Length: 239
Image 1 (cartoon, rainbow, N blue to C red):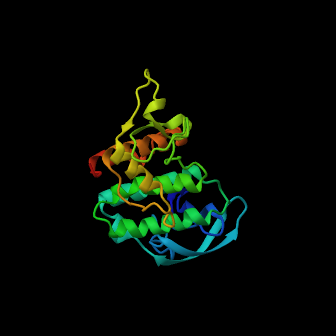
Image 2: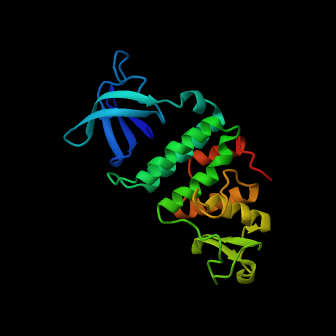
Image 3: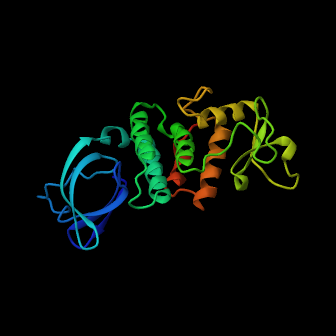
């Protein structure tokens, strides 16, 4: 469950992310009444088995069974902010009624990682890069996006408009850019790496790399994630 909003006196509209249909809006009638059988089941980020039927404008939720709840994990402030950013990005980037099982699986694994993590917000850059990759927006990281030169053991800078990292040879002198040293570039590449990649993947972003990923996501989204504006209070990326 990604988000909910009130409808009328007793109903709610839920934005759900499903394996079979992707993003779906559905209404739960009477869910705000204390005696509703659905109350407490349709909570943020719960994994729920639903029974729905077609309504006039929206699907109608008639039954719900919790399969997995993350309440014990996301009740912590940093974890709540991290999962809120994840939900906001999926809601913003994914089209309604378009199944994207890869992103469903990504969110499922990310929620499990948040539950186990000591610093959930440090996991966000990895999630964001894997999400962009699943959407076909993944940033090239092994080679300069401008000239194609290898970035292995090289410093670089973020070229958001070109969609990835560029080598220092291609830096435009008048531009105010976010620079990454060689360790940062290696960390960025490891964050981008898939599990089956020859490059060893990592889950944790260095501080400068986290800034670069934030900027890249904001460029594609057209704004910073609203939930992400709360991260400064909690996040402590690796140096």
